[in-house]
Image (cartoon, rainbow, N blue to C red):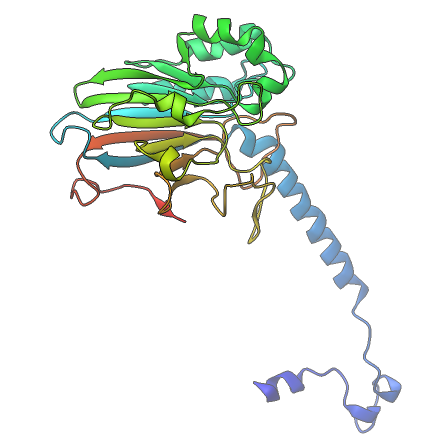
Length: 319
């Protein structure tokens, strides 16, 4: 290989012998056309990336399916379908919203949960209500507030009335019981850390029997550990990254504090329950996404253990 590298040297040392070369052994400059080609390629690739980030990815919704088994559900009971949405940022009913409604309803969910940020600064109550009302479930729809819901004042103004009229149950450091043929399920929801009410995991999960399945809903991708996590079987959380842009080999921009190296999807660590981190559905400002498609998580809950042979197709990443 060393000989091959030397053979492409454009001029021998000294510039003598075969004449016509540059004097003094100086290397010739790269042809001007090569620089122009490089510039054109950069401009074209930049245009393609911009089109993807602005025109394609914001409306290109991914439906991500996963299977979770748990011994607290009846082994021979029917599967439960749970749809997890986050960061809706509804600013009108357009093509993305109509597509999202169709995909959610196609899943025939038993339960739908939204882990915060249903609004943005320019959201209108009628648009948010229309979107939420169109989502169909058999056993209930549940929501927790997100950071932007508090920042814009939606959580303290028209938000509660809108989610109630849309058929959603608002969980604010409390829980609700759902009786199903597969067993009893509790959904506990906590407030976003840092707002006036702040999060209270112990209050949200108080009174939930340890024999029943408990799923914690939280907007922040910061999962309780130790005694605070006792009795919680799964956690559903909003995006771990503040932005909607991922860079090759670098990952998400603006990873939330406490999220570790987690990106999205199912993540399991020794000190926490399994957590499903959403990439979100909308954008809080300019609809811009790159390598970060909006997502709808369709989670199948099934009775059994982790070693159950029926657990084929499970999607969990360990971090």
